[in-house]
Structure formats: structure tokens, C-alpha cells
Length: 320
Image (cartoon, rainbow, N blue to C red; front, side, top):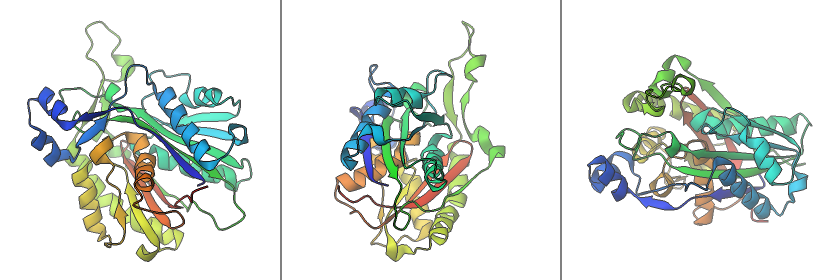
């Protein structure tokens, strides 16, 4: 992983969300841990945000765009069934390379990162741009207390390159439990909501069911990631889970008994839950704030709608 880029729209304070919900700011904070969240403007499309994050990653790595062999975009909020977001991002960079989307919601970025690793490992690519980008507030009912206070918009990108040395992106641990998919889904389906009197599709979440699943699944996934990579907590600088909400992240960290010397990403406090973008944005935030340094391992894990999960350990990028 050569570099990370990010795009965060303007932040909105939790107090404004609370006011719309007829609640208090303290109520929102106690349930979500979200102090501010990023809200995209009407001129900040998923394609635009993904492109800006991608450009920052390329600039941070000092790599020209024409060195990129493929562009992968993890997103679940493309407003059109087609075309995909990735070819448009590639075009914005002046590229005519392989480009495709991966839609596994909150676990999408870590899935896409493994696909990039596999493309490079198979010899088909030397440099792959991986982006997670979502406008989650397009799918959120603004008066739904289960979703409105926590979801947000943004994009994060990483540049993955071939190396002659030890791999900097470890093996993936992934899976799904589709029997529980209804716990987090858009209802009604988009194509079922075409009539003039049809309800507007919106994200609906059974928060308790998702929390129970995550707490019983994610800690074991993190342990398996570290085992598959051959590392222990002494090798790890940061745990970067999907930024679902503050309470859930703390419960997962407690169940893992994360040592004091390992930073647990908490970007959800300031950015909100950006779904596919949350893992790269959280890692970017830790580096930007100087809370971690390049060279050591970070354990990434995405989880959510599907119910699906994926994660891997990565070497934190060194400054160019």
C-alpha cells in the first residue's frame, strides 16, 4: 500500500441532526458516538468524491495516473444501475484501463483491497487504485432514529503497487451470513418504487441484530486476520474497524482486549459512518493526526450489510 487519499465533505454537528429528530445532542452522542458527520453537497457526487480521494492518493505516492493498471471502486450508492462509478473515475484521471465497482456496502473496501492484491499477485497488474466512496445520506430517511444520526458521506482511496520485498497487504479473511441480510437493507427495492404513490426507498436497520452479529463475528475475524498474517499485537500499530458507531467499536475492542499501545480508530466521531469509505478514511485520519507512523501493521476489518465481512492486515504507508 503506497499511499492513502481522502475526501471529506463539510461537517454537520450532531446537534442539527438531533433537532430534526426531536432529540438532544447528548442523546445522539450516547447512542452513536458521532459528534459531527460529513454531508455531501448537491455538486459532490460519488464519482466526484471518489476522484478527489484518488487524486490525493496518487499525489501522496508521487505516482502519475498513467501508471495505474486498474481502478476498483467500492460503493453501494451509485445513483444509476449503470454505468458503474469506476470507469467514470478512471476517465476523470485520463485512464482507459480496467475499471469496475464492488458493492458489498460497509465491507466493500476490504473486499476490493483483496481483489487488488490478487490482481497484482497473479501478475495481471502492477499498480491498482482502490477507492471506497459513498453518499449514504441519499439512502437515509432523515427522521429515522436508527440511521439518520450516524450515516454520512465521503471517499477514501489507496494505491496498491507491486513490490519485490515482503507483501505489505496480508491475506484476506472474509465471509457472509446472507440468511440475516434483512437486518440492514434498502426497502422497498429501488425498481419496486417507481409508481407515483410508492414509498421512497430508504436504508432500514435492525440495530440490535446487526450489533449482536458484529460482536459475535468481528473479534474472531480480527484474530484470524492476525493469525493468517503471522503477526501479534506487538506488531500492530492500529486496529481499523468499519466505523459503524462508537459504541459498537468500543465493544469489539473490549472483546479483543486490545492492548493500550494499539490505537483503535475512532474516525466515526468526526466523519460518521461512510460505509465503503469508512475504513480508508479512518486509516487516513490516524496518519494525518500523527497517531500512527508508517512501517508497522494496521488490521483492517469491514462488516455490515449482507451480512458480510472482510479484513486484512496492511503495512502502514511510509511518507514518500
